[in-house]
Length: 280
Image (cartoon, rainbow, N blue to C red; front, side, top):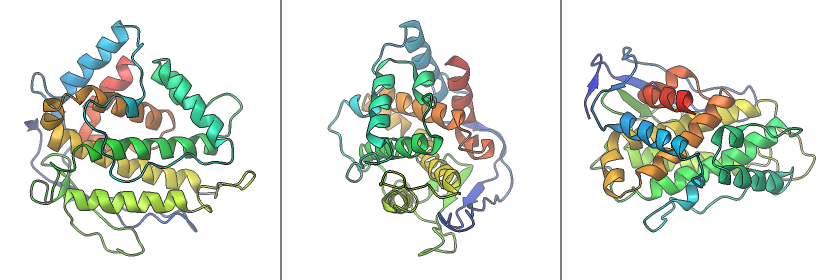
């Protein structure tokens, strides 16, 4: 792929997004500003997803928009699938997600159901999107290696460094698979912490719960950005681009609906995101 724009590299550093206490968010610093990534190649990533979204729209959107059910190859997940929170209407909301996704209307599927608690909705969907990214990345593990992807990047201008604020306090440069491993371990720890994601009915969510969710989604986006920029041709060769595009469409509409990711963080895929939002 070729991209237009400046040659500077934007380096995003995680300073450790603590789930408790002050709701401290990760510090994003850049070695220069690169501006928006522009995909200009005919038949490139933007063209593929745009054509796919228009195709679904023209067909009436009746495709089963359930990301976990569209794989053509054996489903290799990066780690065991997480279940939705058992308490706090978690199971009922998960059933609502499955039912609305089956209708094909993703805009309706991401909206908060009438009368439901926002934090409950965010919690159940956070688990669902965590599982989706597990499935997606699991299909690429044999291709995304320290040798092929020595840094966690999204094209030539965006690089991500890891820190969790506990075990790794200073941002470090790691390979893409190592970054994803750290990330999935970190998210799993948040999901398993009942002081953050309550399991018992009536247990309140922490005051900074949405900030925790925003950090999770910000970092999950980086996996999508890496896949599109580094492995999209492999995805196409595996005939899995429809699955990837559908999952990313769902992810984008959800994060857009609840303003979970700052626009500056979306720069590596901003054209794709704007095409999704405008088409749907």
